[in-house]
Length: 277
Length: 313
Image (cartoon, each protein chain N blue to C red):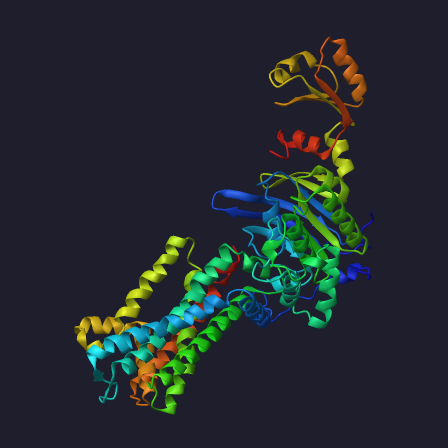
């Protein structure tokens, strides 16, 4: 410090920019930090996250598929059981990754690693941190989706170039879960409460027409499943995988666009509760 | 040390309060800090010092009262205010997933500073923190003292105008403390405003132009260290030890010596203008302390006088 400060150096002009209290337009610094941390320490965790849906696909699709044979696809044509469940597993993996990153990961960095405490003593605002973390979650989701789609191609489960659209669609699904998940985390205070997240996720994974069609349920249960986000993700990716679209695809996509909007709104409103105690 | 030419206060708090339910962590404190001053918050653990620091940084929302930092409310302009703040929190919160040098670089990026500035700055700060050889080490491989020095180095990455130091030297060895004090002096000479909390009297006496004594969320007294000692204590203190059983019982026999008597579990303090003269009086009453010590009054005595308790429990 060679320059001597004067009293004038201490006068600040306040910005009138909206959200100036919460946002400094520097989420990229949070993203850069996340990439550097991944490179130097936790890439192994990332790799394991990729294998989970692949293992499901191999065991259920190939193993169970040998018993099941072919099933009726979204357009009424028969497809192999593996081709039936693969898009659903991709949707589940998008959901799991996004929810993990926006709930457990945020909760841990908040309360134990004290990472955000350090960040928030700089020019960063809580919105920079939230945007950065959501972006990182989506980047990770996009990488998983790309890897999983490649595995599907290797297994001969991809029959149309349109199926590549499953990758951006997975990111949209992940975005919906991530933006909502972070808002939910702001209400959590203990690890016990965090367990509720798993309590919701596991049944949603098993029962959202992931492994068998919705028609097996009575009408009331069907309505309930259709209200949940994962079912929309599963149906959307299943239609994309064979390039056979019904008007319902627009509904599925809209469901997630609304979920993203509501989730971001909730997260922004709850930012002070989440980051500024 | 003179402060900078008169301007509006850099930090201004009015009836600042922070309540957690029924608990009043900070209970209506008011103070002004002019530019370039070194201002201390002295008090025991739980007095509300750290909470006050967090409100200044805009990361804790006040319950009531007014607070401006460089003319801005930190709750409304957190990022802008913090762009000029350096913060050393009580507990190190280094990024354990990053290496030592990356901790400085990444932290600088949080301020939006360019890499062309950050690279030489990071090396300069590593030098200052005596961590140049540890530049590519992992943070969890550092000793406690090294982590503390890295945290302090990190707080200087943006060349802050106001430096908030929450118990900066707790856990440092004496040599490291003196190096840090020297560095803080130099920052102060260049016009940086220092706000520090401490429960070490010597630290407060060394570093603070002015300080407030805080207890249970309230300000008990305010002034320069010398002023506080003059107003709330005598020039000298006679410390007597009679053995742990006798300290309190012997106190009755010491009545009338010096200006004031303070029996503590481990020793008896006699406040007097002339400590040696007081000791002679003690001896002349036929009392034989195991040890006796005459010393100058310190902020510890001020705190004891104001609150009836010691600073370090």
